[in-house]
Image 1 (cartoon, one colour):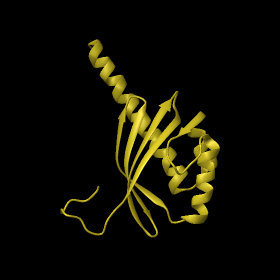
Image 2 (cartoon, one colour):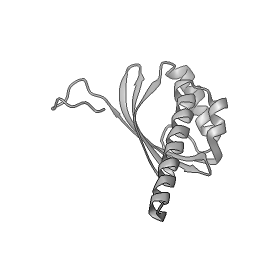
Image 3 (cartoon, one colour):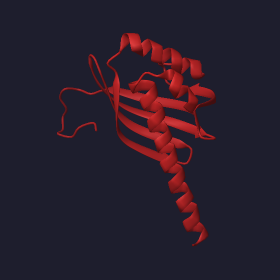
Image 4 (cartoon, helix red, strand yellow):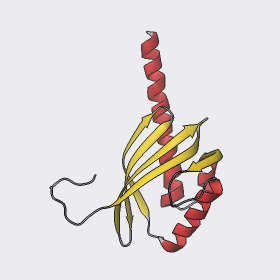
Length: 135
């Protein structure tokens, strides 16, 4: 097997592992609202770029507790997930009252743990100028 083929196989395996890690982590944190279990997926630091949470693992914990009270019906459907090196991008459908949001989450992984998060959210309108969906 050539060296370039070995490198490609390693990258493919890393992408598979990282996508699985983020899917499990995000499902626990947002869908199950189980920060205690999701905490095991977070590294020694957690840099938050979202306006909805503070830095550090405790910032995510505070958001999860807030969500339990304020948006208890929140559920995120993972539409597509892309991994490149230490970065994982998720295109998600955020379902909760009063509406649906199209969300792109970006995570950075270091040593098998989530250490950084960004997000971009957009309301899904009831009508559009085209027949395509946001998903």
